[in-house]
Image (cartoon, rainbow, N blue to C red; front, side, top):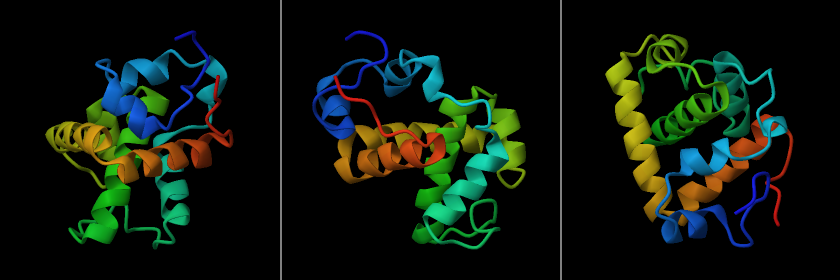
Length: 137
């Protein structure tokens, strides 16, 4: 697939049919897909607004599903858009340990491959964060 193009089908379908990790696919996209303002705290703020949560819900310690799922998406988006380490992302998202961030990334990647709804939420979050809809070839 040429760099800078999205598949003709949904991101979830791509994840199910491709053996390549999603992170490889996103890194092949044009640099304009990763704006310089995609900072960790910015990702948390935009995720809070997108899911209509309070400011502390993403960085808080709540284990309620309505907080955990957006937190996992925020962690995954922060990892892919900022390229920061798990230590840095953990500090920005409630002072979490780097192993918590690594576990969240593993769970999020697995969900994206097996749950098209989660993959759709991820694609919507990327669009919300970058201000650009996913490009299709």
